[in-house]
Image 1: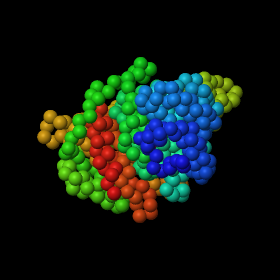
Image 2 (image 1 turned 60 degrees about the vertical axis):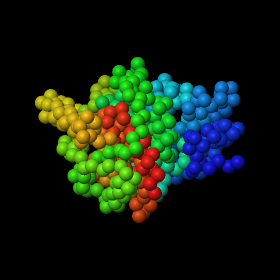
Image 3 (image 1 turned 45 degrees about the vertical axis):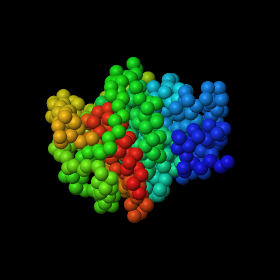
Image 4 (image 1 turned 90 degrees about the vertical axis):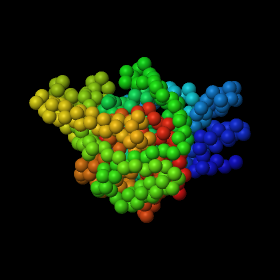
Length: 477
Ligand code: GLN
């Protein structure tokens, strides 16, 4: 029986396995699709040669123990190239780490392995996760599966494109300022940034540690939730990780959805706005309550993000000095060794952020930039605490905005002007600054056929509300 990848979900895959189907056949079908399409898309940097062997082992496990103990039995996953899988390459799409082989498994990888997942390959991204289009990859841009002249988004562009093009059932990305949700929106898939701390960052190459989170991408909310449940949890190896304190799943019949209308009124593409308003109307029709909310400090999000993120990134990237690991340049002395390694290894966007970060942290400027940005971040967080406060009658369950101000842009259209791509992060960055969970759900297409997403954001640890509402709106047609 031919396997229909387009309609495959974790549930239907498990039904197929229960009926005697084999993970090996599923993986074979994916590998055929990859062989057909990946050259055009450049979404996988590497397809793992042992994918079929992994599938055989999973089939054996299922035969011995059944499916029950393996929540992701036979699920083909793709992994962003900044998440470590033992004995496999992990380059963060940088020349700096082109030949680096991971010596251990990230915690999320260990969990996926235990759950029975099969790793198909590692996916393209903006170098060190810095960017929003995958154009900053050292290994070529990833094209959008809906239109190859457009970007797939970023930085997890490869992870979004492989799910959007049916070259993997689910994938992992990382999100520091929108890198899961924005490409998910551009490629017509669901993407979740969990609450900060809920998913371990151990084995994720650090970009900005107080903002980074790993999260899943999938074709629907149920599959996203299934992967999220496997990868979350307290981890001794990540001191910022926490046990989800409220594993609640309160199914509310009527949800209250806050819309910050003044925040989304400026600079948003008309078609994106029209799709957003359609979703609002359908929610009302379905009996949910729409309320205007105010997030007075959220307008400072981009400014504070583009100070805090480079500050932390410049510190984290200090380790790539060409001595311990990474590309090694040769100079006449130690200083020249360092400078040549970093000049050869890092692309222009990474260098820009290191310079910016070093500047804002330097003596005399620290308080003016980093200090103020941190203060603004606290105010933004308080804005969210307030709108989600369920003890007042103003409290809402979810805040809804578009995921991005525009659909995917033409490859190259913004490359000369980094500020233009920074502005695209306007709706995604606040959730990282506040540490709250946020999800992008596909909501239709522009006239040119490009997917458009809607973003839902909830209070800390309330992923359950995102899943509940997400399942409602993903069915709006
Ligand atoms: N586009 C944002 C940036 O370039 C987000 C990156 C990310 O989330 N990794 O910083």
